Length: 425
Figure 1 (cartoon, rainbow, N blue to C red):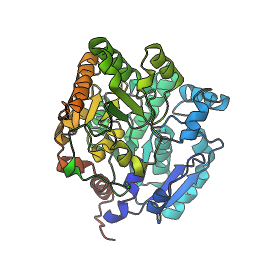
Figure 2 (tube, rainbow, N blue to C red; figure 1 turned 45 degrees about the vertical axis):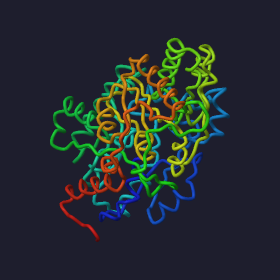
Figure 3 (spheres, rainbow, N blue to C red; figure 1 turned 120 degrees about the vertical axis):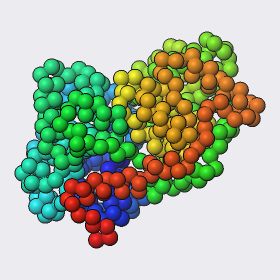
Figure 4 (cartoon, helix red, strand yellow; figure 1 turned 120 degrees about the horizontal axis):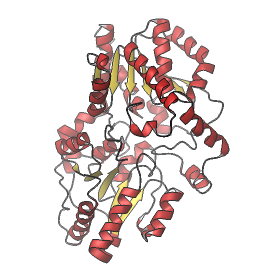
């Protein structure tokens, strides 16, 4: 969705994108997405095996979740997931090798002024480096996620595989004309570890896009009051809980709330967009809180704001080792203009929430603090007073994350590489 939001607006700033992407037969564009992409060339590389239906993504096809969650990944998926741990870079590299002729033909036909590739998959950056050298094209390497410097990414990888990954990462960073990150903390971490990128690294945040949304919200009308019907307090979590965004944090909070406050804690309801996985489901049952998790139906991106606007509070919960990334769902939360509660240790997320007035971050270690806060929110709903979450939305600060703003930043970066300001051409 990061490149999707960029390409929709590039023509406004003098750039015409051609997208080369791995095809995902198991996923279908919505009518609105297809309409927005009209006039933008999308070249699809067809894989031998469709992994999109079982990929652990923020949103997906609900029937697939329901069908696979009891039995887990099929044998082919398990094999490919294992390969990604043992195979240097990632197993998508095999596909790019096999389809490299198709990529070459696209480059020769389009004759691009700039090449822009994103990772992960990291094989996309490796392929981008090869294309850039072969065709002598200025190249922007977009680390939309950190690679070897992310502790979670290195879990389970052998020392040899990690060494190969670091070698290729170093090569990519040396070759790229510009290196792009989606979080300032990630940029600073990479600058410290790879000093050679200091003059060419920059951060452009992810974005939300009112053009995509069916029901964009008037940011000036944001309310700090609970808005859901009934007596319960409803927390929305956009996406499903997964390895990178674990359910255990909020489960621990609910346990603390029950221990400290008794039955009123049962009125805190959590709504992920998709069912709990088997491990989380069993854990919730074991601790007697399963009835407090009520999965919402998956929705296409254009309906995200209207779906999120039914909740009193929007929840961020990330793996405690991922302190250098900004969860993409935060941008949808800003667009929805509902109070955000972040359970993290990421100072950049805390800074964004403070700057936009969109909510508060509490250290993920402070479970009792979050439990007390949520119970106080239940009481505030009963008393029809504002919830005790800092929330004074600043529309101008939120609009800093509008897709047109971030696309203009990217277009300016492209302009700086080719040395031509070609607005309106």
